[in-house]
Length: 147
Length: 147
Length: 147
Length: 147
Image (cartoon, rainbow over all chains, first blue to last red; front, side, top):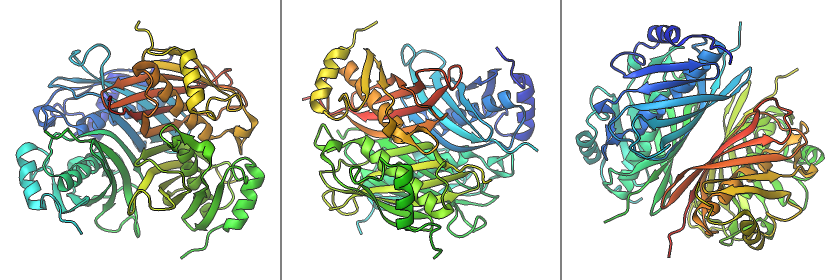
């Protein structure tokens, strides 16, 4: 298996500098693992992410999924922070409880201009049952032209 | 034109109680107007929403669009805070600058179980040119069964 | 208003040559109107498009919507038949009856590499009630690099 | 592993009666396998599915993917032909050549009212390289209330 273009620790360092809000201790967002073509992120549970129904807001889940595709892409093509999402689709499958979320992303296309990632978001503990995803998401990123 | 089921001020009051984080002064999110079948929200510019490229993050835009469909739905069917997004699709069209965003939502379906809203997100000032939307989004909400 | 890059009759002629199946008398698909940035297509009712429930199949509706974005794009940027869909999202809103469908497309972005179109599909006769769309669709096309 | 609610041969027989066009010899669409929670369909190559660029049209790929979710759903919940698509999202990843397509569908949610399926569409022969999907699709179906 091909090594990632950037290691998790290196990506975390670069992203903390570029996105001080996203990768802060306060955000609860962390890179668990990266590989060539994918990554796993963790979103720690934060009470301010709750919405009516005692479940985590869709906005939190979408931000996590979008960020997972960004991290997977940078882990694969190297440091291109100006890569931007052009479209994103999410299906919410089950309501998560008050626990951490894990996002597993695999890139299903890495082209010259566009990359597409697929993300499954699960609860850390299996409250929703075996294999129970809380959301499934795909996102397309536009890759800026190389100089 | 049919009056909304809940006025903007009433919705703002109810949502502030249910979602203390979402509708706070700190979040910068506000209801500008509601009508039967739609609404306009404003997201005040906040420097912590910036991402690399000096533009507003996709996560901020998605949260705004999703929330607009929620507000439009409650303005139309009345106070059903447990309505939840089942799917959402967004196309990012142009990069917004450091200004407020306005989200205009129209519900294109209000069924018994499901409602679908369409949202166009624009910059307040016309930096992106005439009629230039920064994002277009559709979201489906599941409406809980009435008791 | 800017004139289209190609007139409806010219587009119909070119498309019939490139896509003999799509624009044939048998397909029931016709260009009603094109303008710079959009078009209106008609899908004549055909009994072979019916699915269980005496309604028109989703496949027929998606094909119509995708084609509308293609026609709107060619009417706007000129003859680029190798433009291809990169992603498409559709919401089915109401079940159409046994009548013709009309697809109104507006391009909401025309960039150098990517274009995004939005399509509302209605029944010709107002069986679904005032303003009742049967489907709403967005599609992104990739524009091949100019020589 | 749980057995499907309906076997492939039984589904093919029922669908041929309900959808004479979809499952005919002429359509080239066939059920290869069903299981509880999923299925594999085959779309035989047909020259009338070609579009400019000598590749298979997006309409053909979307019809195949949508149908795969329908078949997977009926294989799982039993014969409910009035189940209908409420939304569908597709990403086109690589251009297929002049060969058969295989669609592998897994249901990622089967609720009381809604089901969500995920589909990967591949070429039968590996012209697009190892593991190369030509499209990835998710679709939500609405399940009619049981009598």
